[in-house]
Structure formats: structure tokens, C-alpha cells
Image (cartoon, rainbow, N blue to C red; front, side):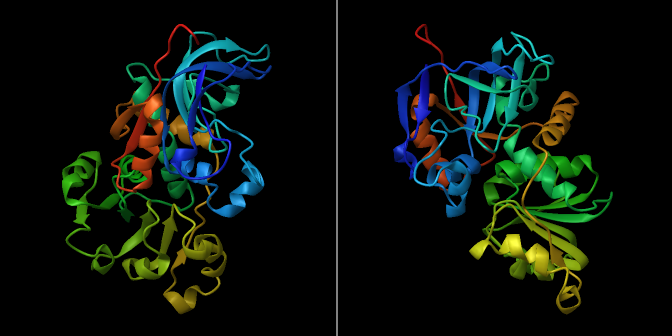
Length: 328
């Protein structure tokens, strides 16, 4: 089969399109014929091993898993003997932040990490509906959101941001979205109540006070966003931040809250992928969630796709379509 392989860490140019052996599912796994995948921030960090401590999990000197890719959508072609919830022919999708190996014509994954695609949802839409929604939902789970609260979403047109706006609409809160001029109508259509054009004004100077600030692109900081928070307000970022501050601040800010206006940060580290995707699947079935897709590339064009994602200017998701031939 064809697969994208990286035998060393580095920029997108380390990726190579190769013929490799088709995988065989273990007893608890399914073999998926991949029709769509994505290139996202997680993938870009994985091939570069950034931050450096990631190598403790991915391989110190070279990657343990040489086929990247975290999101997937496709059809099951074979199942392990212990698989019970899925069958051959099922159309499935999912996400594995530890690496699914989905930048290939075929992949294997454990039964619990794949679920059936809702009817009338394309492979491309399904593949693009998981990573961003997973991180967005974990923002929401880490705080006690109540109907009517005010939440600001910075980076509202990225994969995480566009998912966050839709999920927050589902939870009936008042959303202020920060984006550029060309995407203002898009974020309004996703459910934003108010839009700030960052090309024309500094959103951190907004006079509105918010219960939560979700920095879904990691391009701001708690220090800059703290004036936006009302007493008891919480800041969460999708990025580790300068010197990994967003890992340590959640431990520090609860202690010093009286000195910083009773405001704090929450940990950006996400959990429970399956729970996130189950919610998104339900919302897709109800017509209340649709992944935003910026561009589509073929598997053979994946280096170009990575380079585009690394520019940090994409709107929503970048999808990779996988075409199969008789040799696979």
C-alpha cells in the first residue's frame, strides 16, 4: 500500500510517499481502508517532535511510529477475532492523538477508537470533525459552563475554534468570536453572537467582561487576556504557551487568585477522546455540527498540505483524500 513515512524528525520535507506492507489487525483491532484524513496541528508537532519532551513518548532519536496521521474516515475491510461492536463494511471515523497512522491507504486501530459515520456525512466531513472538536469540548468540560454565560473564543475559524463556536452554541452561551475580516460571516453562521475583527482592533482591549476566554490558537496569553475576565473568570489555551506556562499556571493561579482579581487558568491537556467524538456524532446526526473545510489535497500532495497548515492561517480543517488503485 501507499503510505506517508518519516524516518526522522523535521519539517514537512522529511515526509516520503512509499510502498509499505499493508497492516494486519490484531484481535481487538479493525483494518480500515482510509478514504479521508487530515493534516492538523497535532500532526505538525508530531513530525517535528515539538515540544522536545514529546520524544519521551514518540521516540528519542527517531519516530517509533513512522506513518503519521491522527484523524481518519474510511471503511472496515477486516476485523480481529475479538471485535464485537463493528463489522466488515462499516463506514467509520475517529481520532487518536497518539498517532493513528492514517496518512496511508490502510490503517489498523483498536475497536474502541473507531465509530460509525452518521448517515449522509461524507468521509471528508467525518475525518475533519474530530481533532478540533475534541480539544474544543475539553475546554468546555474543564469549566462549569452555564446557559447565558459570556465566552470569548480567540481563533474562531481554526479547527478548534470553529468547533468551539458550534459546541458553545449547543450549550446556549453568548459567544464573542475573534477572527479576520474575510471570515466574519462564517463565524456568525456557526453561532457567534458578536465578532471582533483582529485585523482592525485588539480584542484584548474589548470592554466586555467574560466568564471564560478560550484561546484556541495559542497566540495570546493569560497576562494579556486577564483584563477581559470578570471575577471568577477562567482562561484556557490550546497551546502550552511560552516556556510551557499554560501547564504551570493552572497550578499557580488558584493559589494567588486574590492577588490577580480572582481569575485563573485551566489546564489545556485534553482527555476522553471517545466522549468528545460521541457528542460530535450526535450533533452531526441532529444537523447541529459541521466541520469547516479549508482545502483538500491528495495523499501525494501531503507535504504541501503540511506546509500550508504550518503557516497558521487555515480556516477550519485541511483534508487529505486518499485514492486507491488495484495495487493496494
